Length: 400
Image (cartoon, rainbow, N blue to C red; front, side):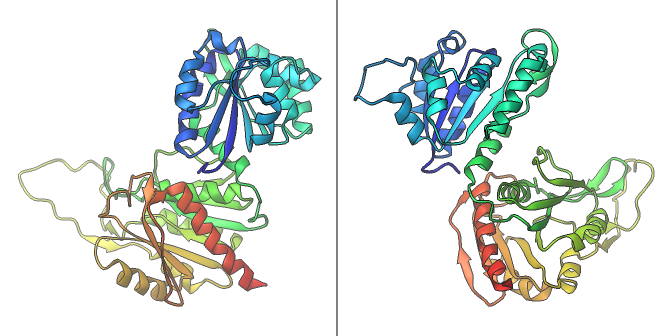
């Protein structure tokens, strides 16, 4: 996700500094060139050697360090950065930047850069709520600086309240959005389905599948990053809801069918990644079925065909389906494109390592209505999500 991106991570003197190596590791693994600047206070909480080892770059500590090739270091890093992240952002650094004070390596680099700057505040709840701190944050936002809301919970100081550093994954998503660049989906309204459905047999047992929702949630995040309004209809998953989406939780195939029908008219792009059950038990028992000496036979009925309904009522919408197959991938997916009136389908062979349910990567083929087939290499599902959206832009051009 961060290939060819230069990210400067500024660490200040807060206890949450111990969480920063995990973020730096994720950025490096994502392909970023990460340069770390630490304030003197930050070095009291975590070793520069740790960050140097993880980032694979020297850690910058002092303004006047003359080691290495000569360059005006704060200007060099400021010019090189595609993004500068301040984590944890203490009340001190927020106040200094708001007041125009540049008296160390981090504050001077912030002042010198034209790249987006993201502050991730973490501090005592009363300090965060202090009207001076809040006024400084408001002022910096008005200048175009970006802020992540702190999380609430138990704080290292012993208090409870707002002031915790957000989870690393939330910070990564915020960085992705800031680096996404052009908001090329502004004005577009997406309806995305994701995850599995559950068809209950009795109060404790259900029929479902292995979908984790990762692909659908990645597409929802990517669409929001690029400016779209997104309605996410999701079956039961264990993923955080992407910020910025309108979230509609459902359980059964019938629940998803009704939700899709409700929101369909509000959308101009529909992407159906959900793995919806094809059958449900005709009889749902109100009480738990007790185990006996006899076999149990379930009579199953067909669930509503959501994608067929969407295709029959397509109108001017762009409709994208998904096909998870184990055999005859191309033949089955191509038939589905025609049968369901799709613009294209994203197909994957779930028997391949690195593809299918539960993985962070995927290997897909895109099959179009005109018979064209496009193969994508194995890549992170977040990258696949942007690739799919890139293909949608060709259909947008056909509307004009």
